[in-house]
Image 1 (spheres, rainbow over the protein chains, first blue to last red):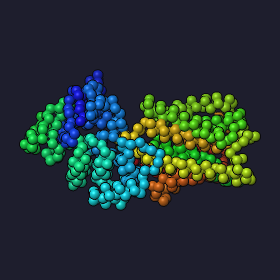
Image 2: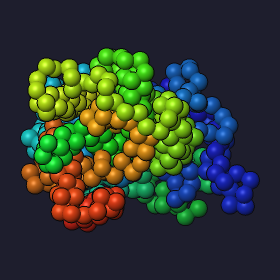
Image 3: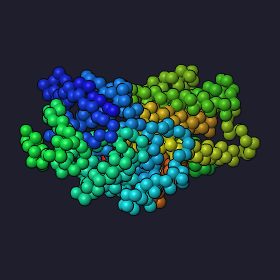
Length: 250
Length: 288
């Protein structure tokens, strides 16, 4: 579905401080595939996600989506099919906009932002039903600026917004790392449910070994910009947390 | 005419600019000082169209709006495409605009005493016309701006200023959105230029110098009003900005009637803004 071909990216090229963040990586993600991406800090995981989303343009190599070369496609033009969840739970929502306005923007992801009122009573009713499924009581706060909600609530809403957008790819960079364990677990479960229900292709970057074993099928491990392990679902089931811990220690 | 009545009318005439500053500074969080240039340009275009071409003042308005929008586009393109800080981009455009306005006018001052004006449009007596026209403009502009901000386009616009990363990830072309926003903001500013010169009866090439601070003052005073009622309602915000513009002119009028030397007008202006900023904790909020 989405393919990386010999993709490389360096920062500070030509300087002594050059960082080869991603080195010659070739990967193929199937439709509906749920992938865990692990590795030490600075191993290139986030850069790889940024290359997929279009935030970073690779120095060489290609990105192919459904047979089309999207290497040079701007980030906002990839938005209709790629949605992202960031580690910072506040990053995915616009704080001064109300809950309803944030959701309105999410549904416009792949559509023109027209000069007409789209935030109608019908729309609000519709999203109130969807938000109620979170059972966090936010459905009564549709007209509250989203910045007044907690980080966990905002991350949960960000996930829900991603599910409404029709995007087929979900990139998640440690979505639960900044949350308390209980809220974090709730967010992870919600993400898993949304990805399965919408048959999304998902890449999850995480440092949590439990999550690596519990979620996703395929497991990728990066080190110093290279993809050093690509574990299939069957192999992954045989892994123990000590095996994975060993990789981190190199 | 009473000094305070004049202050209220002037406050209404400047309210379009205040709404423009509200859009650039508060919605987009861009400190845009193209204002000084686009305000004068609005006045210059109005003066030439009314005095040299004897155009109907209402027909001059679209030309003024386009001229103002172009200045915002210039600043927006310099900022987004050349990656130049918006403050510097604004200074560059504002500086260039001085010569452009002077070129349009042909000389540094054009009187508009014997020409037509929008205030002659409705056949009422004296200052009633000014009240009707200026408050009419304020109401129409508030309504239009608030409507635009509430549309899907407006939500995308506000998201761009509020969380650019999120807006881009939601498929918003943030660069184009900023250019559009600056265009609207400076079109509003040039409308103020259009209204003010017809109100005061002349266009002067120096009339825009330092004018951005009146807009800032209006927005800041408006925000302290909004803080009293603690509302996030956009309509209230826009109305408060216009009220801020009027209050600011009233404060200035008060200072002047109390016998302060008019040469110190700009100093008083600066001190008033400083006082309001310090009192409302504006800076703290900016740091967040």
